[in-house]
Image 1 (cartoon, rainbow, N blue to C red):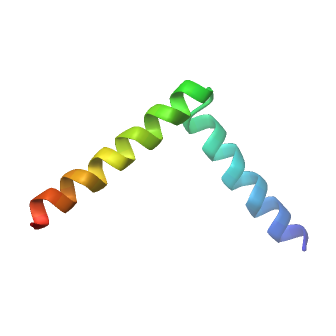
Image 2: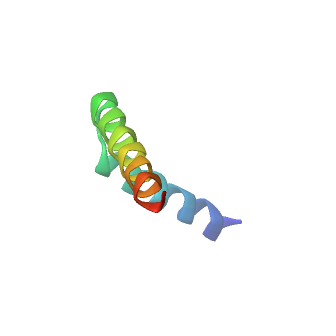
Length: 44
């Protein structure tokens, strides 16, 4: 139980450090969606 909680906190902390603002989170999601879209277009 304790190890699970520590793992969850580490993952959440890393996520917050990667995009520490709402705008940053939006940009991350947008670039991820763009990458998926580009990969789908190349697969056609």
